[in-house]
Image (cartoon, rainbow, N blue to C red; front, side, top):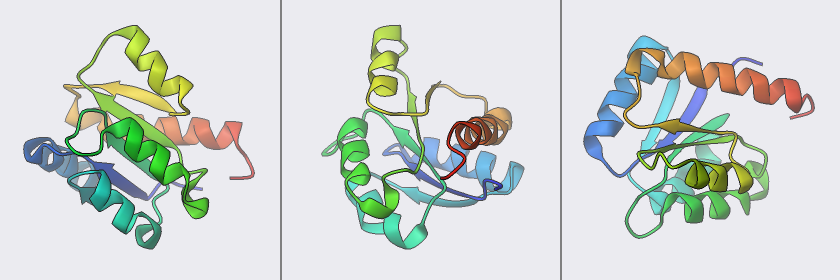
Length: 132
């Protein structure tokens, strides 16, 4: 299965814009950008993402809270989530992986490589979870 649909949850408008260029214009994905956790929760079931790219630090509902809420939706429970954060401490990154994230991408990220990175992570996820 090829990765085609990504949901990106990010409160910073400029990062959403860069990610949209990287993921839509450069990599050719179908993308749904959400400005926060509540917006993502309202749209995730209808969009049916194959992968969710999720910011860690967001107002109202942070990345871990959003992640936990999405995982409570039966149709979304197995969708892989990749966190994106400027928090570069290894212990913090490990916390996200321990919570069930597929991976953690550092900010700033290379827009020219973002799509390729996500596709590689998704392929690895499918190899580890062939029934998904």
